[in-house]
Length: 490
RNA sequence: CGGGAUGUAGCGUAGCCCGGUAUCGCGCCACAUUUGGGAUGUGGAGGCCGCAGGUUCGAAUCCUGCCAUCCCGACCA
Image 1: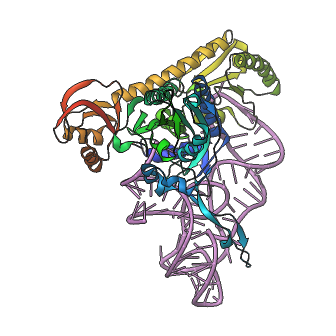
Image 2: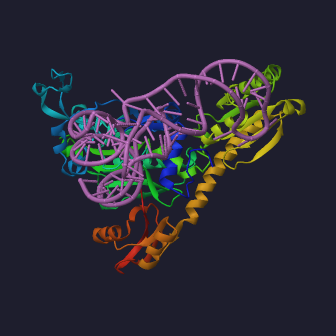
Image 3: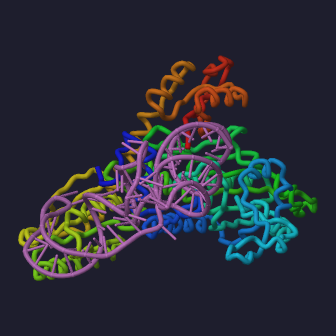
C-alpha cells in the first residue's frame, strides 16, 4: 500500500479521496464543493478534451462559446427544466462591493441587479434563446454546436471529481428539422461516448435509455452510458438527450420547412464532464495508487536512472536521450526523471501512485549487460529486456496494458452483473455482492420508486438492443417483456 | 437540510477531563555519507492552537456563539 493512502477494502470513499490528493490530481479549495484541479489532473482532462474534440469535429460539430451568466427569466420558460435545476442554482444579485467604513468588505446594496443572473447549471436556455435568431429556414439546419465550459450546480453533497459544485464539461446542443434526424444525432453521440469510454478510458459501458423518472429535466428521451465501479456501484459516465421540441417551443424557435410550413425545431443535447476522471480512478486504481490507461496517461513511460557517480549518469543519459527520441517519434510521452534529490525507490513509489503505465529503470549493471528493467503498473510485474528493439517493445507493451486494463474491468463487470428473478434475491445481492442486477420490471414509475426507497437501487438504464423475453416484475409480479439494469449508483 | 466527526507548523498528530504560550513523526533547509524498492547522521528553521466573544492574574485547555471541512442519508452529471 502506498503511504498515506488507505486500503480500498478498508474504506472505499477515503481511498478515493486519498488517491486524488496524494497523486496530485486535485486539492480542496476554500469554497465548499469546489476543487482545484492541479496540473497533473488537468493534463488528464486535456487529453480527454483533445480526443473527444476530435471525435466531435469528425462528426460535423463546431465549437462555440455562450456566456456563464443567464437571465433568471430564461429558466421559467421550460417548466420541467426549471423544476430540475431551480434547487441548485447559484444566483448573482449584485455587481459591486464596498468598504463599510470599519475595514470590512460588504455587498453594496445600492448595486442590486434589476434582474438576477443565474450561473449556468447547463446552457440549454441561453443557447435556445440564441438559436431563435439563427434559424428561419430548413436551410439553416442542422446546427451542430458544442461548447467546452464550466457549470455550477449547488449540490447538497459534493465529492471530488464525481460531484463538485463547479465542474468542467462539454455540452453539445444541436438543432434539427425532423425528429428522426434529432434522434439519430442523439444516438450517434451516445455511440461516440461509448467508443471513447471503451477504447480510450478502457472502461466497459452499457448503453441504454433512462426511465422517465431518471430523465434529464426537459428531455423526451435520455440515453446514457453506465459503468460499474470497483465497489459495485454504478456511475453514469455520459448522457445524450433527445429534447423533442420542448426548448424550441419554450423559446419560440421555428423554421419554415420545404413545404413552406412553419414548424418548431427539434433539439438534442449531450455531455460528459470531469466526472470521467472520477470514473477513471474508481474503475482501475488499486491500493498502490492510480492505474491510468496508456491512451490517457499524461506520462506514458517514465525512465528512472540508477547511478552512483556522475559519469554513470552521463552514460545512461546518452542512452536515454536516444531512446526518448525514438519513443517520441512514435508519439509516446516520456519523462526522464534524473533528479538527484530522490532515490530510485522513492521515484518508483511516486510513479506508481501517479499511475504511469510503464517504468523503465536503467543502472550501470544494465548498461554493461545491454538491458533495462521494465515494470508494468497494471500487473506490477517486472522484466529485464534487451536494449535492442526497446522502443518497439515499449510501444507494443503500452498497447497490451491498454487492452489488459480494459479486459480486467470487463471481467469485473461480468462477474458483478447478475440476473435475478425474485425480490429477495435482488435485495440479498445488493448486500452481499453489489453490482449490476438485471431484472424484470413492470414498467411503472411507482414500482421503480418503491424499489429505490426500499433498497437504494435505481434503474440505471434499459439497455439498447435488449433481449425481449417474458418475465414477471420482481416487485409486483406483473408481466414484463424485458430485463432492465438496476444498481446502487453515485 | 437531517445524522456523525473533525479543526493545533506544509501534512499527520499529543496535550484538553485536572488552565501556567505546545509533544512526536513525516516533510522542509544546510553539510556529509548514500543511490537496483519509499536512505542515514549531525545541525537548523517553521505556530496569532479554525474565528469571535466571555470567565480568569493567566486559556490550546473552561463557557457561549459563529465559521469551515470531511463522512453517512435525501437531491444530482
